[in-house]
Length: 130
Image (cartoon, rainbow, N blue to C red; front, side):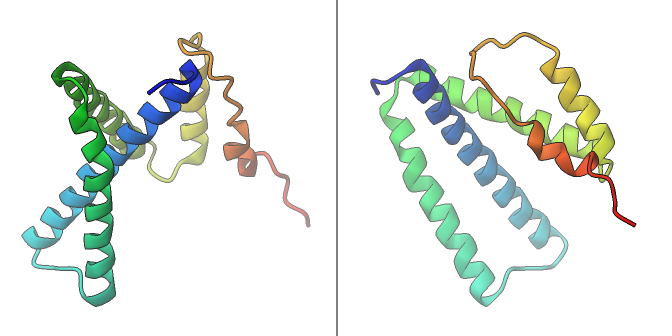
């Protein structure tokens, strides 16, 4: 794909996150079965629709070289591991999540994406009205 470095990076991020979503959906399905539950009716149809759409989207990666495919897989595994670990360690503690976010932001950018995501934590800084 031709395009800017930023466009290529965003495209790669979408493919990686799509793979992360598929991994976690399939893991959820296995966990449901293991515990004797299953999705039913609309939920099952929606689940199957999403999985099929992800597989179609990911089929574009099949046209890439083997090393590129392996890199996507490795990137997906790392992002998934970091995301699940962050969720596990922070739980419902939004303040801890913010501290982790600030810690990661303290490192210099490698891709110069010009990220402005602080508003995701704005709810932590709103003062309650009496």
